[in-house]
Image (cartoon, rainbow over all chains, first blue to last red; front, top):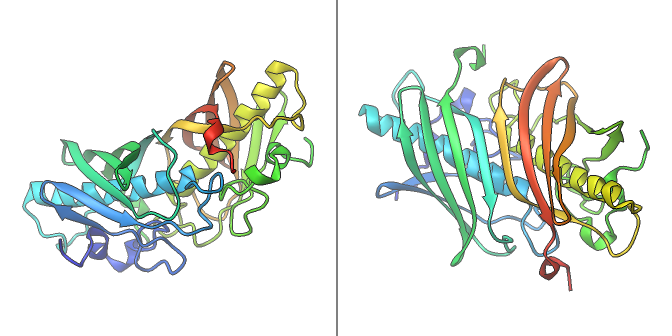
Length: 156
Length: 156
């Protein structure tokens, strides 16, 4: 596992995402890594990210799955195309569809571990299945349909 | 449209949600209201909630849809059962499944309007379809499957 996450290869102008952008001082700074054929990200929610006291807010869980999904899509596409993650022009995926099944209440005070696996890899679309665990408990499963970012979203 | 949102009827011990809890000082404080047979909520993202510069982060959109969905489920269940929203014991719904389709990039600097409609109403489960618009642009559609909160999630 490298210390540089997938998101650290995003160019600066595409690194402002609240969930995973290194240039967003207020954000979550989620970082995703390869772990064999899977991808992994870890995040410990802070006390504000509450749903019912003692449990993590579902919107945060959706956010983490979303950002780990688009980050995984980027890494998977690079690997499939034999290109380095640092190569220009930047390859950046956005979410077309996100589905999250909340399987068990997610406890506060525990590091959450997200694991991703691609289930479909095309040039412009990657589908990623993601699990989110707190310790041994599988708390959520997600599916992210990630598509190549439209060029008109690139900052002028 | 009343000035008291559905979420203002949640009892204090269930009002800490980051997305919609009145008792979470750091949170979004989303409020949902009846508007005829639909429910509506409005939210203007702040600059930190960025995805790509100029566009709103998908995790926030998922969060808003999630909280408007569970709030709508609560209001719909109360209306279906002919009970007041303030009635004890509290009726509180949590999300079993959330799906969001991102149809168009969501621009920053515009009030987002969420509209919800129930498509299934059962005692323990309500399904809500939600649209999210920025001005005239339909940016996202979501489906929230909300279930009655398990009693073991009630704060002791």
